[in-house]
Image (cartoon, rainbow, N blue to C red; front, side, top):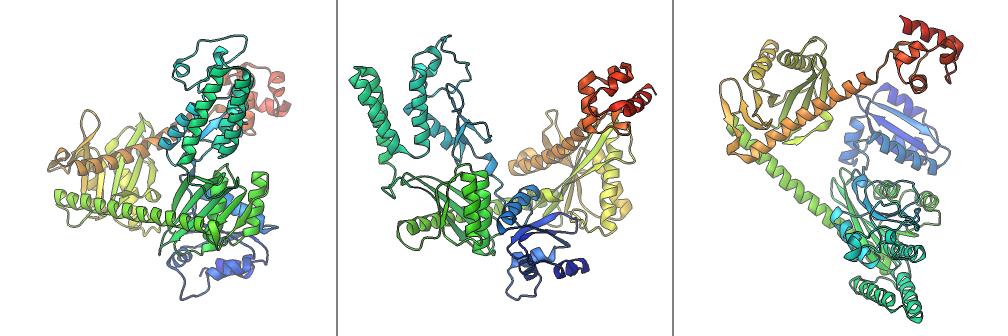
Amino acid sequence: MKATIKETLKNLPDSPGVYIMRDQDNEVIYVGKAKVLKNRVRSYFRKMKDRDVKTATLVSNVQSLEYIVTHTEEEALILENTLIKKYRPKYNILLKDDKTYPHIRISVQEDYPRIEIVRKIQKDGARYFGTYVNVGAVRESMELIRRLFPIRTCKRSISPDKKQRPCLYYHIGLCSAPCSGNISKQDYNRMVQNACAFLDGRQDEVIKKLEDEMKGYAEELKFEKAAAIRDRLKSVSELLKKQVVYSTKAEERDVIGLFFDDWNCAASVLSIRSGRLVGKRSFVLEGMGASTRGAVMDSFVLQYYDANPEIPREIALQYEPESTDVLAEILSKKRGGKVSILVPQRGVKAELVDMAEQNAREELELFRNAVLIRNAQSQEVLTKLKSVLRLDKIPEVIEAYDISNTGDTEIVASMVVFRNARAERSLYRRFKMKVITGQNDYGSMQETLMRRFMRYLDGSEDDAFGTLPDLLLVDGGAAHVSAAREVLADLGIEVPVWGMAKDDRHRSHRLVNGQTGIDLGQDHEILRFIASVQNEAHRYALEYNRNLRRKRHRQSVLDQIPGIGEARKKALLRAFGSVKKIREASLEEISAVKGIGPGLAVIIKERLQK
């Protein structure tokens, strides 16, 4: 154990807080929270025979340790979640796909609300419903809602004084055309309220409102409107017959179950609204299989509801979290009403927890099967590549390089790594040329490889440079291969080198090594794999080139003036429009800009005149 870590462990306080573990590259690899920092953090570094593999691996990679003291356990839990989202540590639970899920949005803040599918939730006054597992499910829900409650989807500006021609959706029954004046604002907003209640799971309430509306129209002898409501009621009733009822009470509850194997864990969330099961979401938490049940439940619940805008009154869990009361308090504040957290042992709620666990088991099984299939496919394509290229061994680790430049500027290179035929993004590296100053792809490739493999020979502790690849691919033809081989020969390194040649359409079609070329059109699996490697190397190099170019374009002569930061630069450009006009302005005009003043105005004027 490093002396600095020992010293930190000695000084740990008896307070709640958050601890942060970093590796040799100073990257955050784990963030945890503790009710008592001294007890929790020290437990990681005690010699324990029964310590799980994940914890042992984590501790072996810790090179530095720091902590943040908080006043309460609640503050620690919130801070832990914030830091996990910020650093995305490799040993923490990460719900990576939350932001990609679609939601239904109804713009209730508008006079004539509209309905749409969105993937980003904003604090704009609108109502958001979901989340939905895939866009197909959300589209089906949208179509159902629009048939039951024909709400507009267009962005037309609607005014009672200016009637517009109804669109096609009105004629096929998917919009009530408030733009044309066919429905009053009052009736339209009543329909929107019913749609929101329906999406909330309050279908019984919707049925009661629709029945009252139908009776009202019938009493007013508005039989066409009454018939339309009748048909809507029939559709809602038919839909509800298909849903299983778990309670006759108007309950709203989420049920969360977990299923563990030796390494991974899956979580499943069942949503119960008005006593009916209305949705399910499942996640695989890689590397969490050996963690304690309470710690996984703590982290999962907080992250899930941090990304999910809909928090029910009650959450039933399979395992007791480490911080039940604190979690309930955090979620209650977020919901704006009391949230109860319970671990049911018997009855209907316990049966629902069992169902959630079964769904989590199924999710983990699907994940394992997908991994097995993917690994088998990867092994097959690598075995074929070994045979085609006549390599001594299967190329489990492949490095690929590409050069990108903007004429004689922003000359950069990318290094991407594929391990077992899968992109290993943590090992990607990029290079900005230091020696090559002009447009010279061969020279740039040689400088890149020289710097990369010199790091290897110097015994670099960087995982990306510490070992040799089984196969080296360069973007280009025989000349690029020759340039790469010269570098390897000078350094005394033996690694097979092949070039990824392109046709006129910039698609990978051949592998070349200077003596022979292999047409990839005969094997589509190898073609697809090599094309993906080539595209990834090109994308990573181009992305770096664009970032540098964007940074250069943002730079200004104002950046070179002492005392001018980003805020003052923006204020000057906002006031005058360009550097040229600042140069032409008087000292009084420059000093009048907020944050400048007479003294700095003199410096600016002198520098710009030079």
